[in-house]
Length: 165
Image 1 (tube, rainbow, N blue to C red):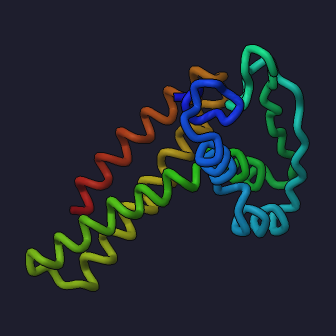
Image 2 (cartoon, rainbow, N blue to C red):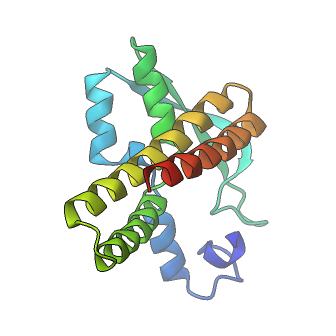
């Protein structure tokens, strides 16, 4: 999909939409909530060069990703920042929309609204948190570890979601 979203690619059907999507493709760390966590835990972020191609890179204009490195007096703060960088805002919006549909369906099936909303909120937040935490733990074993951790987190999230239903 990279060639079709990358506004610098000749295969991108609509560079303005591609640019908009890439600009909106931020992580939870890049939001006001992330900045508040950064202040509370006194987290300092630096960026280092990598050899990984950026989404805006083309054969003619090569751009590499700059990785984030976090420093904090608190290990929990550093861990939280790393977990927040594994949580894309677009993914949260999509997950929230799906969960909202499930809540509405539960209410239509005569479940009490308060109970349906509480269960939906628990499924949404626990699923997001478990996946991010497992991905962060896995990242200590490299990029493959991060992916395996995210997969394990998704599986655990599914089990928690079934238990909440």
